[in-house]
Length: 381
Image (cartoon, rainbow, N blue to C red; front, side, top):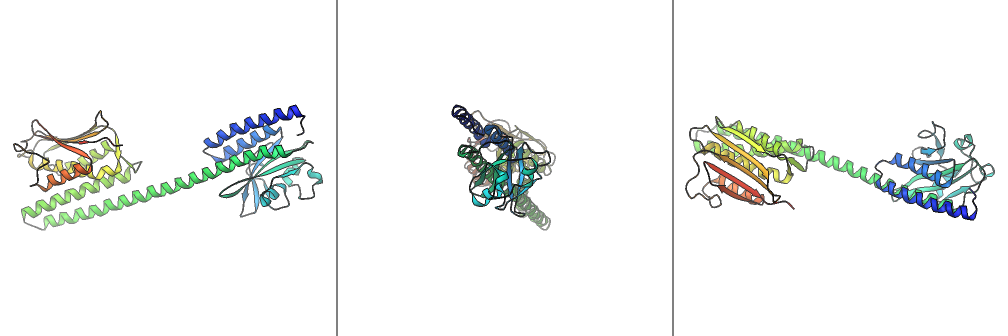
């Protein structure tokens, strides 16, 4: 639209404000079609035009689809197409990569007037290419039925919109691809954890068969201990593949499920779990599960000679940001002078010490009735 010098300056300043505001919207956009629609609305308003449309190139049909727009008949957006060849203004812009201005479509000799534009009485149009590093997305076009002149300043304004759209489209597509890749990775991780759990269950079953196949008490005990450790790892993997976030574990649910499993072999002992609601990184789950398994198994074996008593598993965050996990009983207690850090005669205690180091924690034996082992894990960075 032709404007006098003062009006032209005011128009260009307003266009810059519109373009700047749209740039913020483009950076924040999470969906493409609403962004395209917003671009057509602002672009038409900034140029004082009656019509604007965003055209997406459909290479399989070699047409441009009207995917967003203002001023057009209700059934045009999302359905109408324009030829993407050199015989249409938008197709010419797409194929040549150059902006196209036509201020007198009725006299145009370079290309025909598409049916959509003819039906709406369009007399002039300006087209710019929407592109990015992934290739040409399509064309942004402003149209009008009134006499006037689109000029180079209008192309600059529209190209600003097209450039912002091109960058936003590239970002949204990259994010979509990344999301698909992450979902696939998550699915594969869950499937792997599920299969590992099933494989470990098979191993535990084989160990159970070995236990029943021998009369040697020491062998039975060793095989039973091995089976318990394998089942503990299987329980961890069972929890892993069920988590909403495969990278984080619900500590309360995890320890609760582990204690339910351990209670099956606790006899008349009562096993209670008290864990505060919090999450831990998945890489801590297996060593922590084995740590609790070893201490609970030891308590079941040795804490109550008559085979009946309470065993508690606790987990709570500390004020320094660390985590304390405790296994306690009110049984016969430990031998005088017992030091868990120096206990080497028991395979179980060696395993417990190694797991404590792996978890970057301090293993502490708290004085009192029975035995209370605390693993005081350092805060995670």
